[in-house]
Length: 526
Image (cartoon, rainbow, N blue to C red; front, top):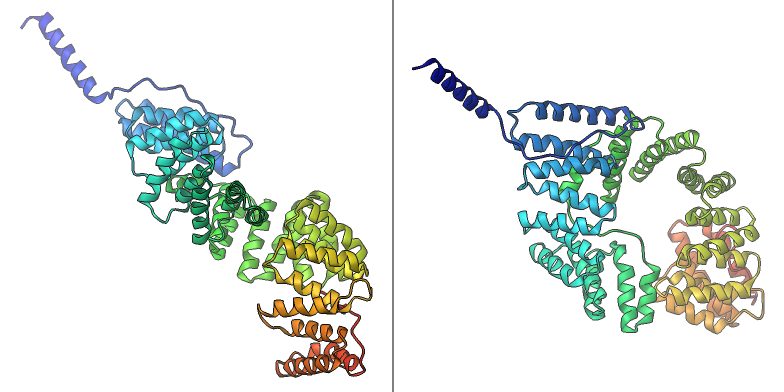
């Protein structure tokens, strides 16, 4: 062998040997970390560790595409979970380039593009995910959702239909089919699917608005109005293990908060409390987490610790309206209405549109002799949220307290029309018609008819008292006396001794042939 041939052979063997340790890679996009300075230390640490792992994997020419794709994808998911979609995208794209057969990368890119409003890109990514796994229900539902958002119901329908065939109990697929039928103006089919959603899950409040639109399309305005009053901005989502995995990646207070909220939604209050506590271990000064933990503890029945968390949240952030509101609720439950008023007022100072706080404030004002002030707060609450039954009923009762009986009658009558299923309005109206001191308002016949109609839904001592009042207004004092004596006997048998003074006082009125002119005493006001 000549020296030249030996040199050539050695070079060839070296080249083969190097090629054996070198894995060919496709062209990848340049990537870089964004500014992490505003993130918690724990999240910064997670992202930097993932970046270091990616750097080591990338620098090692023997790293396989699968391993390198996981390194890129892990960092992309962390950035996506940290709400940094622009930074996350090139990492996820590189993972997809390295292992195009892995459904995770187009699936996450689909969500990333959908969340930032690039529906065309989202549609393409979900289509790619379905090419890889045609029977994936979550991909089918999200793909249908994007097609519907793009104004393409004919493209959306087969995706939702296939998802439902794969998973017959899927609320999200049935909800998608209902919205697709609505987009096609097939209102009867839309009603069918959306009513099925609510039958399967009465708490699926997101179905009410499209269902109202479907009934409106059919000309059934009464049902449309009923569902409009129940509408809520509530998403009906598919089971989505990949997105759950994404949400659980970060060791951040926000991530623990999200997980805790999901536990609250499942009514797993113990798990929610544990998750919120883990978040507070990272960020003890996080007022929202303090409030969430207090909420979970309250639901468990641990009112004392709940109060401590709400108070801590207020100390950390006096303008945090939810914590002020929650403290007000606890004080109100204890009958400490003056203190509750201060809390609700503080909540409304920070968030004037917080309807629940305004309604609660009005209730405490009524119970501290400030019914006139309560009237204006109820009016504001009804203006902000016309379908709030508590605000409408409270408004009527406040009007009774300030002796504006004609307005109270009008409010209760309107409440009966708007909420026929809520017997509280009919019962309240019966009480006012039987007892109001304004002669122009009283109507014993109508009061009796209303009370008897309410009685079909169940009998209570309070309703019995209203019947006796109606008898007395009609001049039928023997019947009023008989009913009242029966009520007193029932209260004594049930041990409800606090009701006896009021019941016996009215009995004396009826025995003397006098009607009742006090709809509710201060102690029994609703």
